[in-house]
Image 1: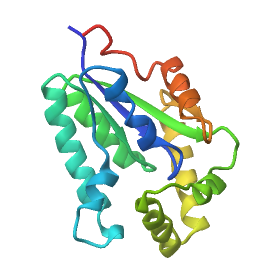
Image 2: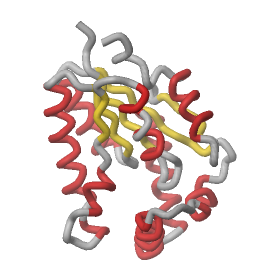
Image 3: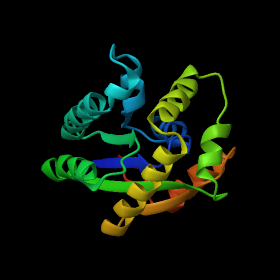
Length: 186
């Protein structure tokens, strides 16, 4: 029997985590997307106060789905090792394989990409406002430092270059990195 997989799509805001996560259940059977940002949108608290609660809900739901044998993909910025440990623990407890993917901007300008992110989704405007209220470029630089520390402490992280405006190409890079196999043939 193949162990279920928990794929954490990590990276800065605007790097394409949710866009890519939404492809998993379309392309592969038995994949569940657990997007903390979508949970945060439905919470009555101020957006800046919802991260911990949403992450707790994602982890609990991930455990339930993994326990049922489903594969789970979580698109979420996790820039602290102590928070990554929570994902590792869920995977360990349920004998699931954890695949941690860090999406990085192929163009080398993740902050510019964050600010260029467009579309009809009002969530993008909310996130830009939250980042500005929390410190703007400084908060994004802090996330980058945190992600670098995560990679340094977890050498098994699969770094995938995300090409702005090319979700098909980035999906191909995820496949090449081995992040989207596992439930094929189930």
